[in-house]
Length: 284
Ligand code: TA6
Image (tube, rainbow, N blue to C red; front, top):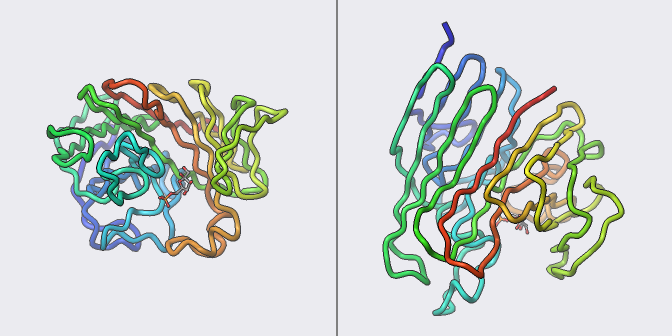
């Protein structure tokens, strides 16, 4: 008999007072924090965490947790003026990373273990009504993370996944579009690459529009398939040396240990419901 379970747990790693939910499906496990609905751990087998969590991550005093899969919503990066009519000072990557979510549903079947976390946001700066957002997490022989909002509003979103890498020099993401927007130094300028493969040997902060539905991440020792749907962009980010040193909740050498490959919907033209999914599967 396959061992399956869903449990409330207090604490994960050094975040000893964080309210979390753990999921177990046979050998595989996952942990999601109720703060931010942030997946913090995905282990296809015991001891092999696919996701990276900063040793300096914090969650008190409105700090978003550095690592795992932060949920960015309803904007990505600095807020766009269209979503901030009163020109308030608003946090990077939206408002739900630093709020407590609730467990809304849980299911155990022969094929998977799943939970749905939900949050109702009463105070979007550009929308008068309460808005409900859900994060659905399904663990089987892979992990599927879906962010769902049925409201017909203008909304951006990203699943800002931090993946553990064995060796950043040998880390590769492919296939990516040749054209990308380069955000290093805040320039936002369009660049062209001559290869569909992203490698990391300096600070990288790129937005790729119209990415493929299936990406391949080679971490140096492991191969991951990253499926995505509902997206219009993939972001690849590594802060490299200087930004690691200058970011409070990163250690000096943290840039050697992770790459962010993010599934995002960034369009601001149309009010539309949201269903954004990232599917993570270890293949080797
Ligand atoms: O997705 C890349 C990015 O937007 C970068 O520009 C970088 O700042 C990163 O996210 C982390 O943002 P955060 O607000 O979590 O420090």
